[in-house]
Amino acid sequence: MIPASKLQRRPGDDLLLRYTQGERLTHWAVAVAYVLLFLSGLALFHPFFFWTSSLFGSAAFMRILHPLLGLAFAALFYAYALRLLRDNRLVRADRAWLAGMGAYLNGKGEVRVEGKYNAGQKLMYWSMLGIIAVLLATGLCMWRPFLAPHVPVDVRRLAGVVHAAMAFVMFVGIGVHVYAAYWTKGSMRAMTRGTVNRAWARRHHPGWYEQMTGRKEQT
Image 1 (cartoon, rainbow, N blue to C red):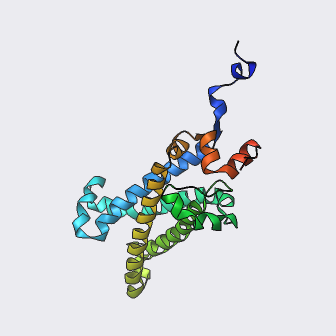
Image 2: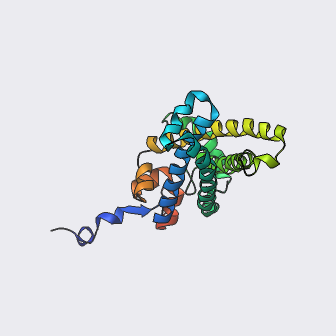
């Protein structure tokens, strides 16, 4: 005879909601905007990459589109990031995670994560807040024919150097972000379907799991 507890269990009972539909849609909109910005930015950065302009139909249209994409990207990112502000506040427990990050990356163990995000994800969050602000400011300084003519030449040149440097740093950061999402099995599901299973939550984010379920994990 099958126990009543098993009869009442549903397939979705093992899942926890990690990201709402609105959060997922905004995240993927930011991702698409970033890819378009990256490809158009390459063409503007060096003649060797100018062939990427053909992906936008023409070089003239790409030049018009790039700054507009930058504005859309910044607006979408900050709208999304502000909703995550509370969950990304650094706490004392994050120091322990950072101290044990080497062992974690080598697959030798994982320091307990108290909140929804680990310290590495939080540092990525805060660094992107600053980097995108710098990219937006320097990009506006170079925006022809609207703002650039009102900016001193030396400032525009410096803005170009800083813009390129920050774009490279962001490219590296996004690469690490994508790799970490792929490497941590179950993370991609969270951003495509919005849910994770309880075993994943207990292993990678036990503090968040306890908040969501009201169950205290035994150590």
